[in-house]
Length: 174
Image 1: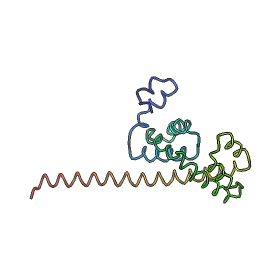
Image 2: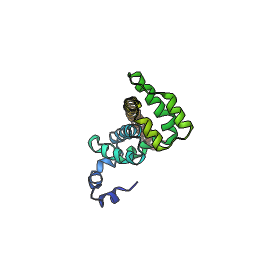
Image 3: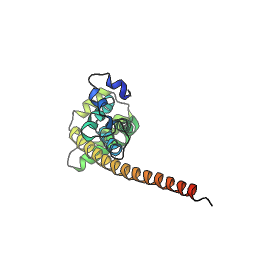
Image 4: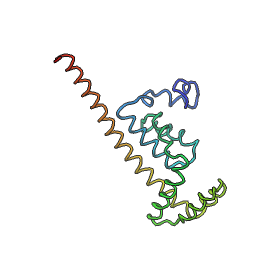
């Protein structure tokens, strides 16, 4: 991933680099970056587009770009093929759409190429997959935001307590 300084020299990326709050690790920007990265990482299944999409989505949500880019790596091939695709189809089918989960299993087991996956996606499985991915992505983003916000508060409180205890020990030695 390019640094902020490198992005400032690129005309198309300059708006991202100019906003310093998108690169700082704060109690607000980090949970937002986690949520944006999880949403894009799960919903947008195109590997090169995920990081760019996460960076662009960080603009309106004021999320941390490096964290969002890192969180898109949740959708590595094993999690995509064995967790997100079957889970999205199952969730989409619960919303009344129809997609055959055994077809996905067969495509994965025989190592289908991109053409076969696109042909399958062109069937009636597409609405089920899109709705399922949307629901899973939104739920994951919400959970990621809450867990990160709670974790950030716990970590800062822990650091504050440790600093206070060290100061007390320094001021009042036994």
